[in-house]
Image (cartoon, rainbow, N blue to C red; front, top):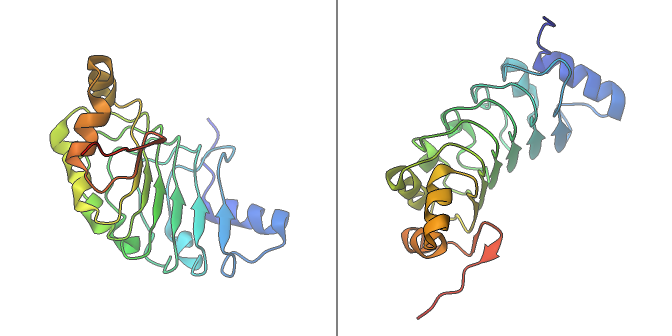
Length: 185
């Protein structure tokens, strides 16, 4: 069994490949590491200038160590093993987009800390209940949501009332699952 890649190792490789310095870079891509990254470790805190961080396609289970990322606007964590949305409080004031599709998220506790989140891509997770979905109403700026492939969406799409029910519960949305929401008055 190959040892996991650490964030520090991935950053070193990334610096060598791009010729950029991690602490000055606005966009840092650490996706699809071989072997994969399993932990978001403390070396992430050096990314103080980073506005877009990609850690997708790894084996990360927990969102941690974001406290040094004072300028983070876009966080990409798709295709990992993340089960909960905790750990985002540290970037709650700056984060505008969270891309977290293809994970294992069932509960949305903790979303409310992302006060400026506009875009949430969380298709193909495990959300089954409206009580969890409704927590997204605690995001005052959320306008674009992709939720397709969650058990809740699949059930209601097959019943033919997904768009209607979801947009009723999140009246500020402008786009749901890539479709503009047309308000019927």
